[in-house]
Image (cartoon, rainbow, N blue to C red):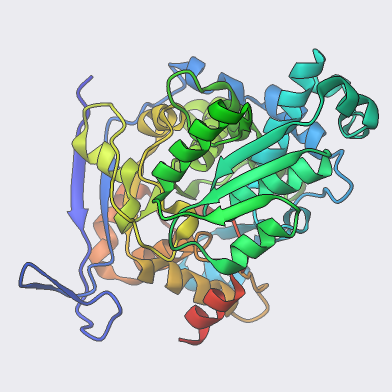
Length: 428
């Protein structure tokens, strides 16, 4: 299938900006993001097989599982009324995942559901037919024995796997890529898991986890897929879609049908694919206009769209970015299929963009509510602000249909999971 694309680069002229740099001798002033528009984005759910596992019917069951956790409650959907007015939009909503089950990030939704599904499968029962108390009971442990779950992570996903394993009376082994935060490592160790920071990048840490799972008989819980490993990533994506299901329930309470626009950050793409897949299955051709946003040095979804051959393409190297949760070089092919078919635009952003978003959310206008959003949570807010503040992007705004009727959804996927880094960015 031939897919038309339009590529453009953003430059501003403030030479004191953190984004000011020289590349090959050429000065590039505040070159903070670039983008690809998907002019061939499908107008309806013509390939429903890509999204049917994220249907409302399926995700209702997933949310029911999550609701059995003692601390479960839907995270806030913050209405930034004054910021929307400032930017000339109808609405800006921020889903604040810093409140998720006391873990300060959304990842537990995927990890806990995948581990629960695996245990239920081993018990030969449907997950909707077994209680959380039964899953963690001594009777279940006697039937299944001691299970060790393993994963690779920058921090949030690993903590989620370790926490879920702890809650269910099982073990966890977590591998972190080089450069990972000591603060995030400590949070994982506090669950009783075995965890360490390796000298590998994220994708090689995933391979290490997979190899050791095979070697020692562990079960890998990873939110990306490869040949022969598709079931668990699918469960994880279903777990993530609980957020979208909650959002729709919260919007109904406001007599709103849906957002018109969504900004979704991507690492391997599982989170973005889950949310877009849910909305595509629910609304078809009337789904929200969706922007997929990545760090510049880990922009595998953007690069895949740019190459434009329909296949996922990897980014290699250390991928050093403050957006540690998004520093992933190889797309999840299950998620990529959804993002390729139904996404509207793909953005590759410098760290400055998320730093800006963090500061905006932490310093609200008038009586808007403050949102503590971490490095991987705020990039959508930063990008939205840059798109709306410059006349240079009038044509792009028109192409994306960002206007006074727009109701924009941003999902802040984490809070200050690394408090020292959060403070340095806000104070720096």
